[in-house]
Image (cartoon, rainbow, N blue to C red; front, side):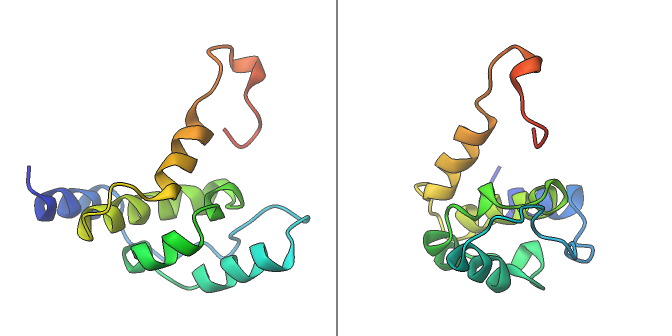
Length: 110
């Protein structure tokens, strides 16, 4: 499957409804983390690009579950669209999803 077809599959599977109004559930964000979320606010997932992700690669750890679900396809598509498979955000996602096989050890976010 070529890149354009794969991106179109993401668009079909994940409709571009309105971005979530609450991007983070955390009340302990520092100024830098809040600035990253402010830069993301109002963007649709298809507007996410590699330039943003290279600077804000750790934003994935601060997203609320709804925001994570909404923006995940955009993160994937940015890497596909710009042929950049080495984004640190991809490593962050894998690290986040790499859990123990024991569900009792999983946190609330997962």
